[in-house]
Image 1 (cartoon, rainbow, N blue to C red):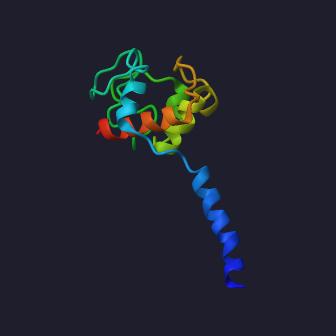
Image 2: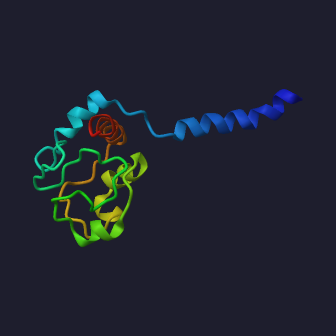
Length: 124
């Protein structure tokens, strides 16, 4: 009888882990980041078409000194975390309407996880 009572909890635990975000691989993320280097780099204070991504995790959108952000990016004031970066990379125009990032959404969930792991490791 006790075993039967545990089955729903076990099923829920398995379903929750299956729905969890994939673990990111920073080594593969460096390869994904190569797509971003036309506009971004990881050097503090160095801007290209986009702001430096050094220290992006934990930073508030629109606050990197020396970069002229869109009003939408400044006004959104989102704190970049793995989950907010994932949402933005999946749908930049939907997540922050009016932002100027011209890069298309990064549709592949694993690519996003890998990129975020790389940024978190590299951009300190």
